[in-house]
Image (cartoon, rainbow, N blue to C red; front, side, top):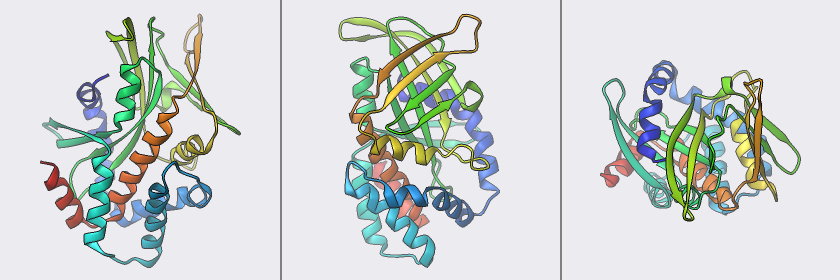
Length: 265
């Protein structure tokens, strides 16, 4: 599923979320995010140490409330963004939107592998970024996904249809390994409501686990169906790279954000 199509599908819903977010103080949002991931950050073992460094710097800056070295922050953010794929879209209500994904997710799509696709939406330096998760189901037959379950080494996480921002039921077939396959994606924003949905914890658990199994289900039906498959190994690196960029962007100043974004245009 091409990023441009995904962006268009979610702009209306995101505009409502963005209006709510803009009414809150930026430092309050950062404190909430840091509190939710504190335990996971201290015990996580990311694929690359730089991701853990981003978490540690976020927690340290939050506690000390200091600006830090902006030039160093810019260099680290620039390096993190270079590992990812960027695409712009424009909406009359929101304006310019930058969607950030991992090239590993596109590789999985092209090879016909169902996968997890973390992403970031950036609306400008004065607004904190939005982190999201896409669960992509690719197969020769259309399933009608409404539920996603994730099995890690120690936990099972279940996302039902009412927890998704949208479920893109794309019936357009794609070419993969000389076969025609359909593609569906269930997408949610990585938010924590009353401590019920700790999406950051889930992503970190997936990175830490030796094996991760994905289950795509059609449960809102009297004739349910489900398909199980292993999560591609490179999804772990995709998660690490996206989280790294997300926290580096979240942790820096508006000036650094503006300079980093200006370099991309």
